[in-house]
Image 1 (cartoon, helix red, strand yellow):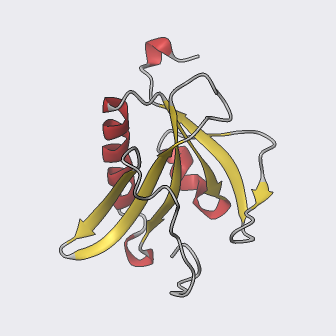
Image 2 (cartoon, rainbow, N blue to C red; image 1 turned 135 degrees about the horizontal axis):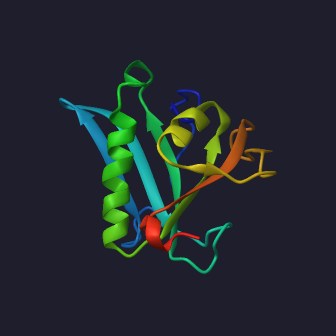
Length: 136
């Protein structure tokens, strides 16, 4: 899903085994249908906040639009809040921006770019994990 269904293309991150990394997945029966990984990383929007970067979020094509990705994201966000994370950010694939915007993310104006890894259009996005009363 992430790399054009090419099994020779790696989606391994050097930080995968770090104890601070968070990997959350969704199963439908015994089938993996959603994946996501989160890594500590300075936010491009609020660098003073404790933040993580979302990478490698993917939902199997035949279950997209059924809420599985949103559920996995919600679980991950709750786990990150428990760790004291205040903001998450990502380079969101433009074809998935509808999903991100519908689940509370915002785009960073002027951040549109082609991914160096995939050569596909992306836009930087972020989401505050702070309570509404303390958002800025």
